[in-house]
Length: 397
Ligand code: FES
Ligand SMILES: [Fe+2]
Image (cartoon, rainbow, N blue to C red):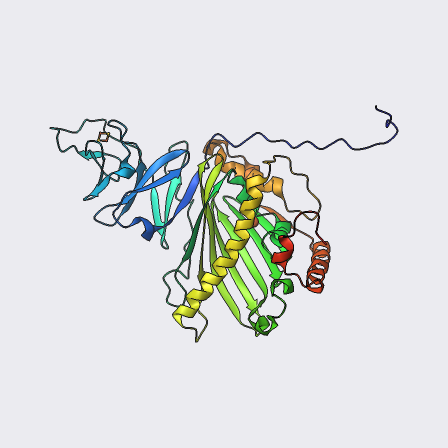
């Protein structure tokens, strides 16, 4: 049945995948807002293939320990905070935030080797971070999370924060988004017109400008068009493997710019699931009441959630792929993954090509033409981007 020797069909492209890595990234990982851990109750956190306990002592300082008690394996996250210590529910051994057993109420003395793993923490701008390092080293001084200017500034809103558990995908999927311009149109309802990446050291940045999509406004609601953003400019940087700060400005038709900061961060539960969190603060417009500003931040966060929910749908069913097949208008996936690799090897094994500066700008001429056409078609057909996206496969215009 091989009568086609004369044709020169390319071979079928095979998807390659080595499976999820056996280790977890070295770096600072945000566990969420600090205030959510400050209630003096033990909190269970599943991260890095382990169970952790997070608790605040009477001094308010938040600590993170391995959840399993070194005595007989009790689960400290089911215990009680007593003073500055976490008391095990099994025999009441008291563990301090430094990982040392401070007291055993029924014993004459604490065994010398009574020490458990304590995770380095950082509380900054309302968020709690822990340092993961498979080599067990302390965080280097030059690997930091930058301060976020608008936090706790009365001219800005408070955090609007979202948490979601992603099952069935490794966290590399979300990191890939850094270079994936096209998915911002199809999955996040954005319209990128400028897209550039810069990787350097432990940071990876995405510069993206876009225009508002006319097909996001439902027909008949054109009276609200003046409130519809005409464009946006975003500079989003990963500081390490899992924490992204996005300086995002929405431009409005009346010349008003609304600056905001979006956090996009995650931590791995295990190789095949992770917790995605994102938060927004928005600069209050002059004359806007606090509640209105908060509502605006919430509205923005909800729009971002819509995009992430669609990311999640993609991740849930897609294949892990080590050899993506790219076209010219795709971003530098391979270079990004080389950058990302630095967090999965021992510090001594980090190669220059993982950290040296790399820049790439996508030529957006062709995508802009194609997407303009698609938006126009949606409008002509009375569809919004959202309703178009929900069309079953095969019915796409
Ligand atoms: S197992 Fe924790 S005190 Fe015994
Ligand atoms: Fe995405």
